[in-house]
Length: 247
Image 1 (cartoon, rainbow, N blue to C red):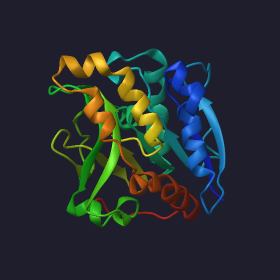
Image 2: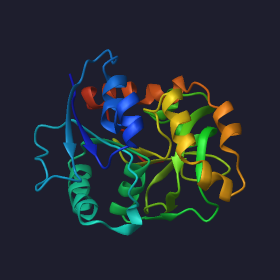
Image 3: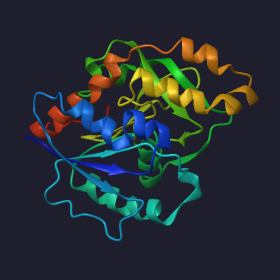
Image 4: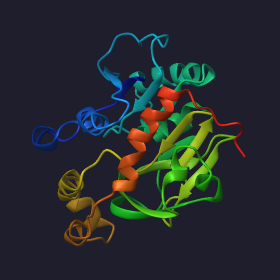
């Protein structure tokens, strides 16, 4: 049984948290169906006064957030050397959205606002050749649908990072940063209802960049392959499986 720590990096909209669950709850709901039945704890990085010890952790799940990595908030900056230590210990990691951007920034890349604007809705993501061979993402079809909601992005991947998935909006939809350290821009934890609720909140921002929220809401669909990454990650964290190289 893997011992997973969810690193909570922010709060969802109050109505979404009330009706569907906050970021950490969405992860917990998916992981509850894992065949490994992982032990899951939550660490709220935005409110903590000290970082947790890594000795009794097999895997880290870093959530999304409404914060921006480039704003370099003190609690966020404090996570960076801790994530580097976790990577150096080869602790399994999966960063999602903000977590994806934070890991890239912590490991020597850069995250900032996407020059083409926001990417929201259920969109197609395509695996690279390396992604097709990856222990985590390789079980997915070559092209799959995933829920997305982000204004910032990884604008420069860290040296040595391997690009595992991409699409027309974002060349860094998934990265591997080490033998057991992954990050994804999309939200495997989102349900269809959560994705629709986010699009409802983003109507004005989407309209300002020439997109209609109602069309995107109508196009929201299931993302079972993307969601399955969370239980797959729990299995890999439990097995201590490593990738031989970053080829």
